[in-house]
Image (cartoon, rainbow, N blue to C red):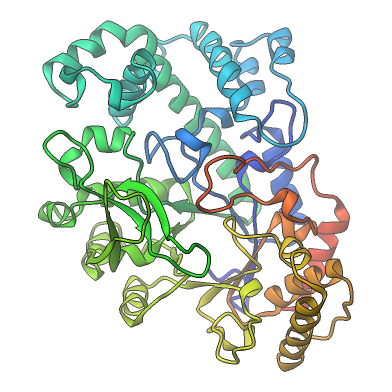
Length: 501
C-alpha cells in the first residue's frame, strides 16, 4: 500500500450509499465521480467503502442475499436513461428528498422503476447473453425469483425448492426465465458495468478502492441455499450454531449475529474453493480487501441456534493459516487488511502475520490512561492502518459530546500528552476542535495508511453515525447532502502534505 517515497498514504471512508444525489441513496453515478475528484484534490490515495452487496433484512451491507452481488439501489438511474430504458419524466418520479436513506421508500418504489427499465432492455444482445450464460449469478437469480414468489424468504420456499440444482428448481428456472430470472441477472449486469467504469476512473486518478468482505453470510441467502453442505446446518437445513461475539465492555450479553457458521472441515476437503472464489471476486472489485471480524478465521465464537443471547457460546478453531496458504497458492499475494479489533490473543496476531495483512488501530479508543494502549499512535507499528473510528462506533465529535466535563478535560490532557510525544503541535479547546485534533493525530501517526471517515473529516456528531452494533433499526442511513467543499479538501491536503502521506 505504498503510494509515495515515504510509503505512507491517506484514505477516506465513505460508503456508496452515503453519497448525495437526487434519488434517495448514493449511486454509481456522477456524484461518485465528483467525490473521487474531491479525493484527488485532497491528495487522498484510498477510498474505503463498505460491502457493495445487495442487502437483506435490516438493510445492513454485512447481511446480504448473496455475498458476491451488487446492490441494485446503487445502479445509476440516469445511466439507464442514457440507454433509452427510462424517460426524463420517469426519472423525475424517482426523485426523493435529501437526507437520510429511507430504505422502506426505496423498497416500495425502486424495483418498480428497475423492472420498467428491464422491460425495455434488449435481452438478446450478445454481451448480456454471455453474462447470463457465464452462470456466476445463476443461484442468485433463482434465489431472488423464488423469494419474490414466496414472500421474500427461503423459510417460505416449498420443500421441492429447498435444494439448488434439483429438477424442480431447474423447471422453475424455465418457467420464470424471461421474466424474474433475467430481471435479476439484468440488475447484476448493469451494476458490474457501472462499477467497472467507476473503478477505472478512480484508479486513473491514482486512487485505490478498499472494500470489505464480511466474514459471515446471511442464513437467508443464495450462498447458504446453494451450498448448505458448507455450513453447520441440521438435516432440515436449519442452523445448529450461529455466529456472534461474547459479552464485553460494549454489550453485557454479547452480540448474537445469527449468521450460520461454516463447516471448516468440509471446506478444507476441496481446498477452500468457495472462499478462494469469494476472495477472487473481491480482488476484481477492489484494489485492497478488508476482512471483517478477522479473528473468526483463527477461532470463532459458536452460539447454540436456540440461544436468546450470546452468553452461552464456545470458542472453536477456524481454518487458521491453512486458508491463507491456499489463497496465496491460487491467487498470489492479494492485498488485505485484517479487522483485528477487540480482544486479540497471540494466535490471532500470528495468523495476521501469516496472512501478511496489516491490522487496524482506532485512535478514538487510545486515551484510557493505559500507556501501553495499542491504539496510542506512539505504540502503533508502521505496518498498521490507523482510523479515527469505524462505521461501528460514534463519530469523533459524537464520542466527545457524550462525555461529562470532567471526562472531556481528562481526555484532552491525555490527547495533549500523546501529541507532544510524537511532536504534533495543534491547539484545541472545544469539542469540535478536539475532534479535528484527533483527525490530525491519526494522519500524523506512524501507521503507513491513515483512513478518516467522512463524518470525522466534516466534523459531524452522532446524528451522522452509520451503525450502532446490536441494533436492527435506524442504521446505514447517513448521507452527505452535497459534495464536500474545497475547504475540506484543502484541510486534508495540508495534513497529508505535512505528515508525508
